[in-house]
Image (tube, rainbow, N blue to C red; front, side, top):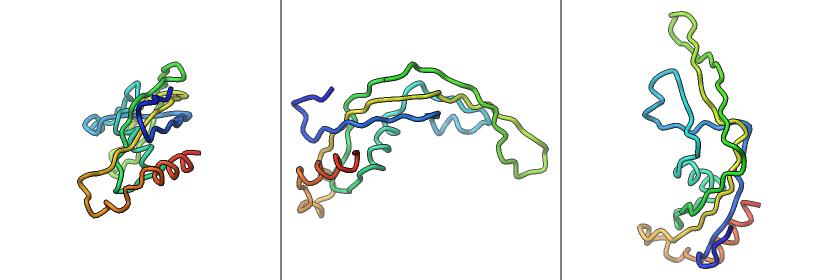
Length: 132
């Protein structure tokens, strides 16, 4: 899956029992429904949680869906701080999602104070080690 023309390219697997990828705008009501695929920002957040430095900016290149897209509805009783009684919400999750993600980094040109930290090999090696 790797592209020989892109430098600093890493691959990682994102999977879990359940996933809920939503838009903050849809979080207003009690019902939540997932997107069928993770958002660009969600995947960027995953790689940034593995290795983040202000010197670099991650770019998601490709996503491969490994498992069938299946959803599962769950009845959730959210915390109710008022004494209005019980409420019940239905959340629609992805069930057993798995994605293979390919990403690379570029240097953050908006942070000139980190110019001395722009060592491509160093950041690539650390990112690969953190993913493993």
